[in-house]
Length: 435
Image (cartoon, rainbow, N blue to C red; front, side):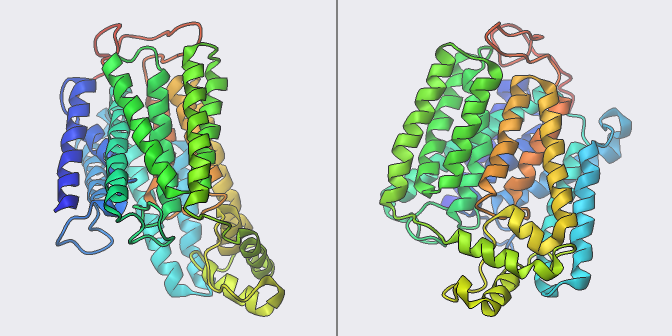
């Protein structure tokens, strides 16, 4: 019942966000925003009667967002369709290469299931970016992500107070809602927290919206600390520092960011130590993975087979330690090299480069937030390997959508240079607000 209540309240809150930003509910933006808001909530919002893994709120909203995007493109055609982004070609190339890896995979069943999951996310991402989003749409998505932080924070606090934290996670007494994994949960929090940070320092936002973003950032920080994950904390700190440098702030905004991030680091790192999050032996895992891929580093061993690669490498090289067998790679790049080889690794690197290039070319606040988010994704995946999770592709979609942003959103020490947009103190709505 608690999960259903979260689902209902989140959908209502996202609809309210759409009304606040656009004056009425824009279905495609609200669905994408609700999906993004639900991703960090993960298993904390499940819907009874649905088969796993489609029983989570984020899965249902993702299917709805994808179906709605397909309907828009099919029904309205060129009126609401944009030219395919160059990144889409790389997404398709990665998906095709991963599917082809099934033919030489050392674990065909694992490759099949992992590839099926990743391809579903790629199809969803492609469908979403085919729709012509405007500036209002993207602000609806951003505000929805902030709303999601409130829910994640309250769930984390509720679990902490009730003593239920860590009951279902894979890493003991740590908060984890994304596949019950604290590391994945922390990684999923980085994008919405950076979006909230951007809204807080945006001088054009109304005070109430900046307050909403500040509260969301604070509650997200609570959830992030309770995950006791260093990777997520490092990614957030680096992203916040990048925003300060990129925007050139030397005012109270920069001081506020520095204080917030400093407090988060000072409070968060001792909290991580208190809950006992020690070393996971990643260096030995990486050594085993690299040793295991020596014979097949060009094409890889097949997507999703890192556990088999690790086990075979450890058994063949006892000095790597036999106390842990069949573990994940815990590094996107090492895992990609072992599973999909140098060819797949190159495609993956090009995907990240294209996402950063698109976001960087906007030279506005939203673009800088997207650059920080992609950078955060890269940093968190130095300790994770998660290309087949929702949050991974949500970040890439968010970066790609920056090319659709209109309204001249330049924010910096020289003052904003913008066209009037709803949600700001300096004017009314700019954008179509058609659907």
